[in-house]
Length: 225
Length: 225
DNA sequence: CGAGAATACGAGCGATTACTCGCATTGTCG
DNA sequence: CGACAATGCGAGTAATCGCTCGTATTCTCG
Image (cartoon, rainbow over all chains, first blue to last red; front, side):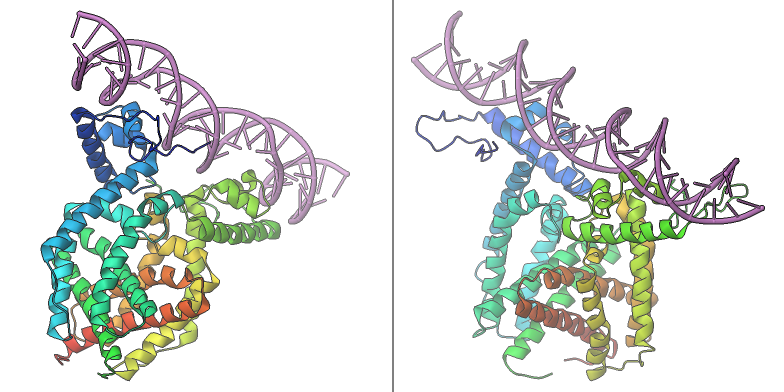
């Protein structure tokens, strides 16, 4: 039944399967649809967003949307992958962060990571609709799982350098918690109506992450407070 | 809109409005329906839960459900109020917590509050479906808003004692962040498949909250690390 | 140009869901 | 008992939504 392997409308990798040659017009439509999807997801949330609403926002008929995307989840997946690419760009711009020891270094490291991350979330309101939820419908979860895993890997890499010698399981857990802290705080930041309140929430986000990681680093070094 | 003060199916407070006299049988049905709703909400999440599924789980016809609850949101509201009552009981059992100074006291205070709170969440899986989400559909948000406000008030009370002299706005913000930390961590705790992993996540929850609040207390006392 | 593919449309289909309604049963009270 | 209210049922309704399909237009390329 539902065996259609429609990866964003590309051709199946078979032998005689017709390769769909995408025109420039089609690529532009895809961009417009994803842009609209990001907007509506950000405004209404994933569940409440209808595919017809995305199409309407993009100035496109429902049929056109389904020419490029097999279903609603695929729109989410494509959008998630697009976000992942931009995040990767962000990370590349950071360059190689020096191996953190503790103390002041940690705050700088956190600022270097959290600053752009907050800016990214403010610039892309649809991002949190796909990533900042704790309970997701199965389709959405599957769609964003690969990107989630990639993010976790990146964070675990940083945490591993912060906590050298810790077993992998603990490093992974600290990474999971750190990500969750950010995911939980982002809505408080983006949802702030007042500019000053937003700045205050951003400061709280830094405080939360830094104080947690510092405590972990202290535990690692057996250095009591 | 929505001025219906439907407190679990009681009569409207008007003059000639017919007062619905509830029979013992009806009260029992209400309990069964709310119990079923808690189960299904916990398993499927709020959006994915259908009213017919709740009725079926309760062994009741859809018509019977709608005799006691005007709509899906009212079921959620009644369930939320029921949870609020149990939480209030929990808080009462804690007794008056001594005014916390800092250091060890903070850890004890956190353990006294977080321990029962985690146990409550594990015992009532439907709770997080109503409260632990950051993006809620409008109907659900309105339904649980009063209970959310009550919880915030309680936490702000504790935070106020922890951070004496802080302006109300800052106390409220620290309370909001603290609640969000717990809300974000709860799914990691309840979602742990392994018992050891769950214990570890509970420990992380304590670490997160304590290290954040300790940092806030230190900032208040101008006592650098 | 001409043929085939890609793009575009939008009415509408099938499935789902919150909720209703007519009617049967059970409880309450004089 | 008899009248009325509360409870109970479940097929049915109206609306929504993801998605399809027949058809028309535009592009590509020989």
